[in-house]
Amino acid sequence: MSPHVPSSDSIRTVALVGGTHGDELTGVALVRAFQQHPERMQRPGLDVTALIANEAAIAACRRGVDGDLNRSFAAAELADASLHSVEQRRAKAINAQLGPKGPDTATDLILDFHSAASDMGLNCNITGEDPFLFRLAALAIHRLAAEPDPLTVRCYQFPAPTGDAPYLPTIARHGMGVEVGPVMPGSLNAAIYFPTLCLAHTLLDLVAEYAAGRWPDAPLPLDVYTEIDTIPFPRDADGRLTAMVHPERTRRVYQPLQPGDPLFLDFHGRTIPYTGAPGLYPTFVNEPSYLAKDIALCLARHSQRMV
Amino acid sequence: MSPHVPSSDSIRTVALVGGTHGDELTGVALVRAFQQHPERMQRPGLDVTALIANEAAIAACRRGVDGDLNRSFAAAELADASLHSVEQRRAKAINAQLGPKGPDTATDLILDFHSAASDMGLNCNITGEDPFLFRLAALAIHRLAAEPDPLTVRCYQFPAPTGDAPYLPTIARHGMGVEVGPVMPGSLNAAIYFPTLCLAHTLLDLVAEYAAGRWPDAPLPLDVYTEIDTIPFPRDADGRLTAMVHPERTRRVYQPLQPGDPLFLDFHGRTIPYTGAPGLYPTFVNEPSYLAKDIALCLARHSQRMV
Image (cartoon, rainbow over all chains, first blue to last red):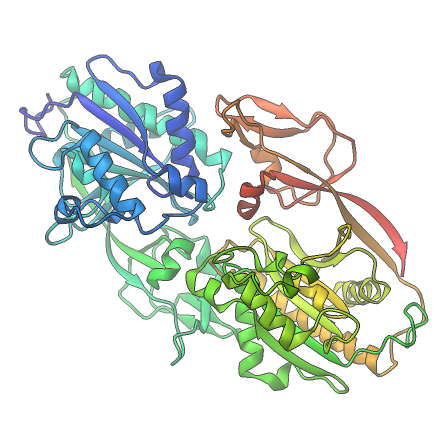
């Protein structure tokens, strides 16, 4: 066991999940590939399963049919038999199969594969604080950076919500999202698929090494990008968009934003500069699935910790 | 009047349409901008209106709510009062407002603004044969190529369907699609928006010049890309994708495809080469909205004509 995570925290059962959002096909293809060749996901000492989360949404080629499956795993919602939309029923079925959410869950670790249209690269997404997951992410990041064809992987942290978190990975004892981009919703990007597969294999290797007590002792530095804010689109009094993300900013994901930098371009060609705090990192820039939430981009704070 | 189009073919009423597909926001933004500043679309001798085609689909941020509005304008469907999905009702309302489809239509020309996620650039889409539209496209292409900041515009031809064509522009005497990309569904790309606006203004200018009898006499060469085939994705016996568009091909829209060129990459990293006829031009490459139609890419034949 690593000295950096509780020694009681054994990991035996792992679930790889794809298609939580039906238009994010990278995870769907990856999970189907593992299902067709289950020997490729098995590791000594681990029991690894692979699950397609929302076949109905995949068939419809949409994020969800009646709602967002990744917001349907709050304990109160899982317990409410009167809720039975497509996503609410799938959440209950997945919770019965991989959970149940809580101390008696059957699953030690869920890796939930998502994709973004924004040029996010490869990310390990962690909600709140989980020493095991941060250490796992750090080891994956260092290992893949040291490959002959190095891959850049980042650790992205969502603040833990107050109260009952509704995300699919919360039904396991540990849950991590794998977020990759750019991949357009409803499509596959071969230039992203294989790096994602490589990250999946590395995470499985590392979990097996953890289960075998073979993680190194030395602490590792980890760069963490913590989402702290979102920026809405400029709109008129009728709620209609008056500007687009500035083309100089669209592709500059994870590049620090400074006051005065071009942020939006209105429909008359006028630049609207950024006026907020310095040194934050734009993420999910111009992400289509965030338009309905009125998020033009997210802002993350960078920090480094030893894990 | 131009000697190249029938002299009886006067053009007075023009409609600019956006949001025929609710997730193609370039046309929505462009039409809303014209609605807010109608003086910018008016031209001497023309009566120009601007219409948002499918507000319900835009609000849902989807191609359509119950169907595809741009397949709902067949005369038989317009006449069938028993058909009343969201899109079928919108088709009837738009036909009442801008049509009715047929010789007594109130609208001489519809320009219908679409966008593609594929890197299509700027296109004038023409279905079948229409000498006025080919000449209009050629004049726009030559004029924009001669600007200090030249824009490349292509003429894309869809074969006319046998029988009753279901497309929105068919309710006018002349109907042209304007197809621009890359713009992700559900988002705006500022780098495409302004060239599209420039093309819209140029088309309006040219139609006004036509109405005033000021088109030049000299015939112009026009490169036409005619869609002649589509290529489906490789699938297994269960109908599931076994490969992605090859990354070398994804961005090579409108670059000729030769036998042996990498076309797909399967999930094991094996390249599947193209084995069809030489010298065709891939278009709509890896277009997400075409996945449901099982189209990985379209193939166009290039020809040149004098118009």
